Length: 226
Image 1 (spheres, one colour):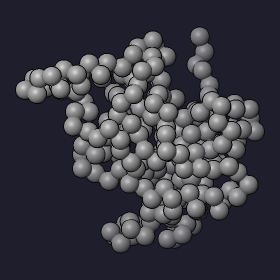
Image 2 (spheres, one colour):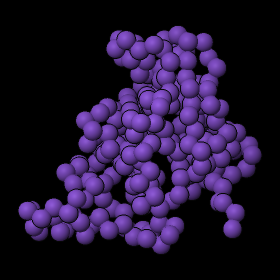
Image 3 (cartoon, rainbow, N blue to C red):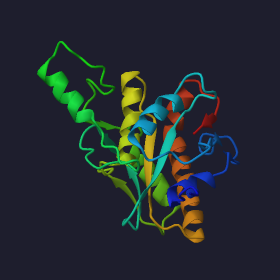
Image 4 (tube, helix red, strand yellow):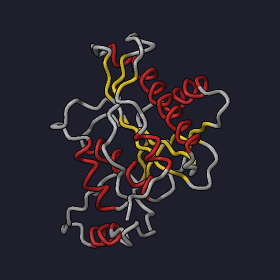
């Protein structure tokens, strides 16, 4: 069976490995590192992958990460503000239902018998540390004719799950949650894929521009990896 192609995987795979803009506070040199294959839409696959994406042994250091997923039925593009720990009741593409509720119940009933649930102690919701309102203004100014939004609900399925997984990983590491999630419409036409590519690149540009002043104050060299 051939791999399934969604607009989200197509948009990311067509993103260039670097964005050729002059290096300056407004237009820093940006290297875009694209994951080599679409992420399998399974809970365990995602939970295994995310720590490796952020691993310190995977050069170069990732300054920002943007997860991209498809939102069927949404005609607009949205960047998600927060991810959710709970509420994953639907099975993944392998028919597997997340067993986290069992871990929570077991730990709540016996406080002395922790079973190493990966999200033990994590908040029910985690927000990105990226200033998404400022990012949205920059993103919107670059693409004034498109419907671009900041969303408050990532959907309680695999998109939400991978977003929270990244947020929780960074939260547990006491690191800045420098991650965002882009939802794209479910149109897989060539025109939609090309538009998704442009939307993604402009979102990355907005993310970097928004955070560049703080990074430069920390002594950054003006070269960023996303």
